Image (cartoon, rainbow, N blue to C red; front, side, top):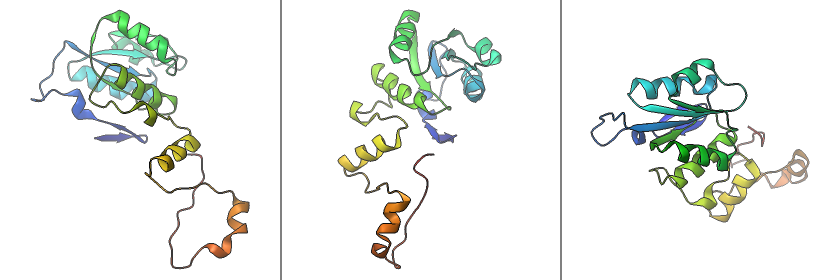
Length: 172
């Protein structure tokens, strides 16, 4: 696994079992801006075709390196699916290093194309911290809770000296 800008990329999913490359496969890059440029370069260096998409601040170099490009908003799942399906390509993996709404699109596309990193639909919540927290609590995956400064001060006597706490902004 590689970590870049807080998004995990399963690089093993890009290789076949023997780590041999196959130029019949396409890697999809959700985003074609500067943040995705290294991802696209690595995929091309490994011998893969690249289909990239993005709207707005795209990198000319990323577009030129891509075998396929479309100016589509990275959160527009339905349009992305229509475009990718129209290409009639063999998708090996999908990646994004940009985060934000791209991560939700990434997960949905992995499910749609039945890739190795598919997950249950109900676990796809994107970057909305409150929605993530609700899902974690619902499934018993965490007991993290969000409090305002006023709520913390109101119940300050409940905080035990022997217990350690993590306090951080709810955004970011």
